[in-house]
Length: 174
Image 1 (cartoon, rainbow, N blue to C red):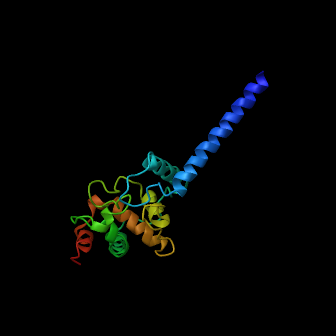
Image 2: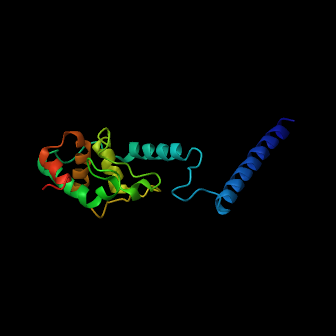
Image 3: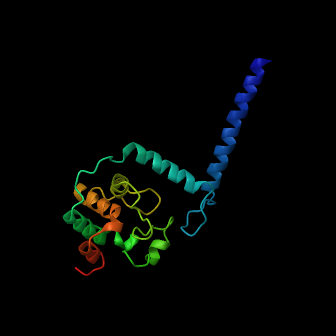
């Protein structure tokens, strides 16, 4: 009796797994999954993506910043930002680019509100170096040097306390 119950329980779990797995496969293979950027997200898509990203960040993001937050590094970070980031993430006092709003998820305006000033520089460094899958955010490791990645990360961490010179460079006045 006990073995029949266990066999039935195992068979039920296996059958449920096959039905759920098969149904999921047919949902995606049948073209029913929302893949267009304008389509609504799947249930729990945002939650699961954030959960995975934060778990990966907790394991891999650098805890210390190897360069100082000097005026020279912030100016260099502004130059990197202008060349590689502003197209999607915009500039202080300017609206987000129309194409950035059409991305899924939309590219965040890094100088609006808190931006990423509340993130550790190591978190911004990790995201800029590695990119974020399925968001349009490319990884810049191999394109930018480690110093450049840290410079732009420090710039964004200090976005609310930038000197007039750095603000001027971002505004196109230098």
